[in-house]
Length: 143
Image (tube, rainbow, N blue to C red; front, side):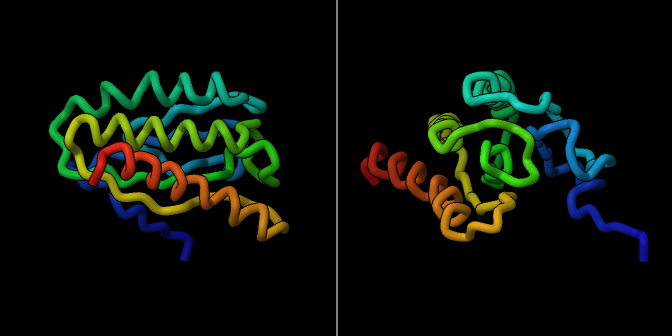
């Protein structure tokens, strides 16, 4: 069937936010409540400024939980992502997201996501970045 199911499409109690390369597959993307489309080749500083420009005000509403899908397809070595974010940039994004959400007292859950590479070991290392950032935030909180 050509019909697609979008789990949160008509769910008023869920707000979705996505940052991605606009000129990339698929041409017609699933719509989020807020989509931030980036130009090809954006590097760490500009990528992080886009995330930092949106996340704080998005968290000003009453939220029960933030579910963070930590896609690694913005990485410069990703075979499909078309952005040029480094390991350090992915780490800074995760650290910023966790610190910003937790500072507001909102629980956060995360999963790995995205990332396209034939080199599974390198891809696995990229996916582990989210775990390193979460561990750092956990230690900082002294929990």
